[in-house]
Image (cartoon, rainbow, N blue to C red; front, side, top):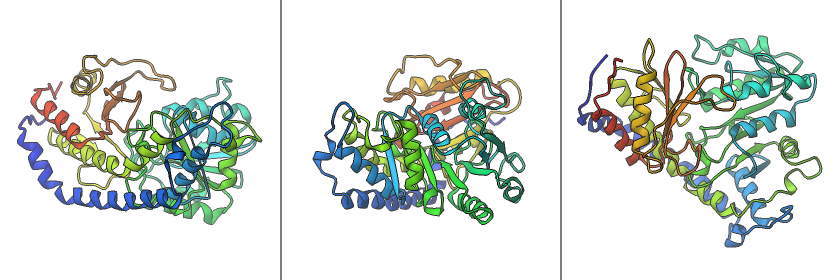
Length: 418
């Protein structure tokens, strides 16, 4: 294990990353132009910041937010609501809204997030209202070399029972590669060639605005995500979005509210301005994040750890995985999380500890003094406390913050071989 504690490493990293940072700025500019165009086309005005109470009927701001998101994702329709509790909740609404008993759900890239297992009903149903309880079948395509999408296997897994293919763009708590837009396009092309009626659904969490295209630009029928990740720009305090074909979005909206209400109701709790403002800032914030995680990947790699993606590889989400090596690395994870926590703007005096979280079978430790609870667009790092011990470093709305925390890690004389 290398022992590297020289702060000049940061300067060295920035020199080597200079060309890549320029590419990220071009992506930011393209996405900013797209966002600004949507605001202008929809003629966003101060009156759209207002809201209505109760049922939320005739909320002009809510309607405009939906239209702006639909334009950005190049889709027929969108629904953006603070009543979506999390990304997991949005995905659940998409599953239950679009699938019916006897349908088959096919996951393209191995096992999905831990938090989706009970929703799907894997490894077995606990009679808790999972898809399996409702007679919806599930299967998944194992990864190729435990790292990549197995494109060759797709035709043999898609059958006449397959109603939806599920593409989880980000890696979750896995070592696999996150799925780039070009790969999503290839998956969709293969699936649609077999049956054009299969719903191609992309969990876009952590991936928005990291490239110049979104999954819906390359044929996805439905995309969704959380507002406390990329698309909320660190400003939106809660919520999620769904964008895609109007019939599918209506089904999801009906699951969130009720058939007959769908997207026509729902109080927005004075959040229209914050959602729009966060969206406007999002292209720049995502660029800052991508610079920060690239720097983190460089630093951890020079410290002797394996990272995915590597510092100079293209990023399609805002997360890097850091493999801490063989053996029990729980103490090392705790040390790194402690440094992140004490150098956070909120709760810097708090010690992060591992704990059980809803939807996860192993204890998880998370560091990150964020302004918005659970925000992963803000700088955080977390890890499931299980082998192989892998740290997931994500977010960082301000590149200077990421740089500062990494410099503290280099100064800390961590027992990196422990």
